[in-house]
Length: 340
View (cartoon, helix red, strand yellow):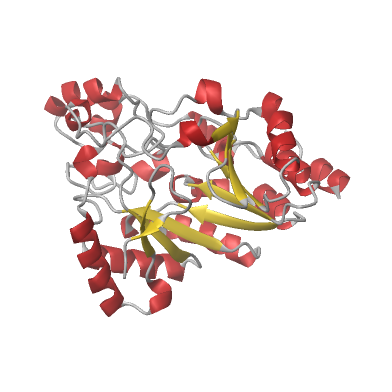
């Protein structure tokens, strides 16, 4: 099995998605000009970007309405002066307790039966509310040279049945690297499932190409893919095609969204999101309360409003289209449901 997977997928893969990844927008001036936004925003954008850099794919950029500073997709990626302001006391650099749960470099073990593997520090896009925007990746990710330490940790704990590939975004890794890691994991007898947490099918849909589908559908492990989409405007034809390809390849695909002020804190938007996801063969899975990370307080929605929105959503949609409303709290044995 190993020979079949590794030799089928070589380092010489089609370069289109890698070229797109290399050509992301990182210059605030370029972003404002491309979207016909007022240049008097530039000083504040630059100040916030010094804390957490701007990064957005051209694919995502094309879905943002021009000349609209309140576009819900723009608000997710545009550095804002509010990020530099004093934050509430409960906001921190490590809001979900990743540091204390890191057992060896790159392995976060919070919950029974599963571990999270930080495969890379890189993403295709910098979401301004990212709970790992301050994460010490230099010390805490299992790069290829450190894989064996992480694999040994997993192999030595037979209670672990599932590995979650995260980052950064694991799909920025080349397919031959992902296939190699997947094969090494599948050689651990007690592992049953592999989960990938990724935003790339949403922000860089060309990433879901034949090479990717080839290795992911050939794994001995049961693979689940969890995407991250917050607003229905993120799902255009290219994204829907990519997501449906995953379904056609037999990969169960779920979505986790974050409830964000002025972006998706509306029952109509949340209902549209669930419907658009399902039409693209993705099941709504989680609707997260914002993780209280330093720099993101301006995105926070109160628990009361979140619960009110959830109640309205259940009245509009069939149960299978209603995501679980949850909050993640450091030190807890599982995510906390915020619904009755």
